[in-house]
Image (cartoon, rainbow, N blue to C red; front, side, top):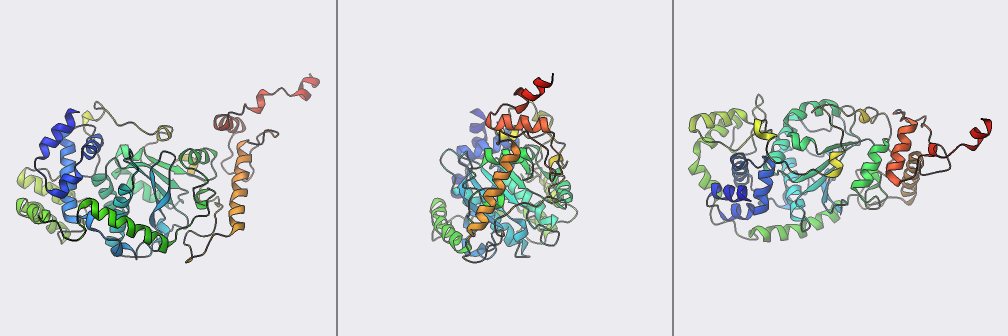
Length: 434
């Protein structure tokens, strides 16, 4: 494709690590993220190369983030989704540190590890975010969340296939309204809210995941829980392979990319230091949380694009350029105005979710068989509510505050398992009366 060749030519000569990063698939992802606009893709990619030269994500070692990962607040699950994509599980309530910088490094490590573990032919991953026990006390600061959002959108474009927000509480509505304006419209379409008491949500989870591999905390049948020792052993194995891929097992790269960029573009770093107080860690100016202040200053002084932006592209040519294909499940998502709270999530906080054990496992403690049996019984009850029991007419569940209409429920059942609605079966008693 000519856009790929043109972008490659625009980038010019690259350092060793940069050249390994800028594969043809990588260039295509940045082009898709900018709707195949070469100049915008180049600006975005150059911003990523600057960030990687400073942050050095490929040099993060597991021992640096192992302590932060002990509670399982971010980890790569053993399972894949039904399309063979790795799954990153996130549990914000399991926060165990006030070191926001190290927490971000753990997330970056997890992203790099998930990318390393991608099966052949896959470029994307799924996020499964569990909001159980989330409160204002254990949630991350908005400033940190904005910085995380900036890193993920600007430097890992087209890596996210779907973000599943499982049972977010009412308090998350405020955070969502703050974050939504900063989310790229294409990324926003990939966010799926799940209410475990909604039949539509249960159906979507079954379409996305193998229920026998999915943790019971998410409505699945698996008794698997996060084990920090076992996970640490997995990460140490992956670390060796990741270092071998980048060619940095023992010695650092001969050419110091950061020093080269410091000498080539001093105004960029001076502007950044002026607003952040350092040359690392990302923009942190309170009045401009995504660093727009120093970006504008640098571009004004030099006339050169920094390549750093919010990831939101509102240019008029957006609709006229080819768009990346969306996942089928994502296409069925109800179209909402960005920042709106989905209607089917209104009662999520008030309806308790059947769970197996706790999301913060004790060291080496297995999930009890009786809890697994309870989870299976709960799922069987959901199946009955969906209409699997063909001998009963579908009725509204008195405990279900959503009060789904009977006819809508029959239509959902017919779509899920092909069972014809019971209303189509003649009522012999009624015929006798007539």
